[in-house]
Image (tube, rainbow over the protein chains, first blue to last red):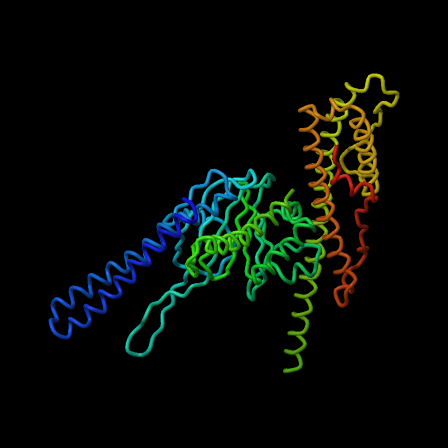
Length: 274
Length: 177
């Protein structure tokens, strides 16, 4: 679809939404005189309004996202409702904070610069129980929200190497030769050689750079299966279109910037590994 | 009585500290030995790949006056200096092979040569990692025996030498044919 066609579709949906709002207001007025009919109109208008909103967000949004992502990713499969395999998320050691619940959506699969790529928006939550004397209340607190990326790489290692930003009570078992790096990052691996093989001085510099870009909350695992896993805790829905503008060109530009920001993490690591 | 208890506690603490410090020295020595084995393995891998590359290059340079007759001796239990020397010789051999390859475009574009070139680059990266692991462990050991009060327990242990390479060797990693 062209930008003009998207704009027309957006305008059409927005026109419908205004109509539903007007109908809803009429329903409220009628409710004062004929409550039953007023209530039916209010319910109907609310239902149609939320359906239109969903239509804009999910159908038009997904198509726009696919257009933008498709510029960079070959053989793209984009599924807004798709989720990442939880056995992978649980199986790859990323040094995440404790979590009990996994939610992922906006699954993207394809090939980036010849490397197999998968990514999604990930949310990890921890169950917490509070007690106030009259009873206990269970709720979930988000401990991680951001993009989760898996990209293939061409090095062969026997043990996985995990790098995460240093946190209190969390220690890696490998000490690199750089004191500065050791102070700021935890490096964990069963093989010291593999850790030094992957974390060359150039790679350590690149990790520092992307960590600064991510606001000091990044998790990386160079897995022995031949994939690099990257998780950035930026508390955002990174692969979702925001309809802050009416113009599709502007919407695409914003999403393009957002997507390039994610690609920078991948580019830095791929360049560092070669 | 209280004085005796205090003295016993101090003695126990000193014994625990002495044991843990001595174990730390031993642990670091073992890690240095392991890292040294890592260098030997990486050198062997590099040597094997270089030998294959030399054989391929030799078939292209029949009219070349210079031949690759360098014999690089690699055996188990080599001293650090000997390992460094072998490393140097391999560096020279790599440079010679690069020089030959530059004169033979067919050689440079041959599939076997390209594969071996990748193999050499990978072997170099493994060697570089092994050097860094060794030097990081030597640095930790030297620091441990030099720092007070653990230096009191170093006994006959001496600071160990780092694995040093010449400047041109480090560039081997970046070589491009």
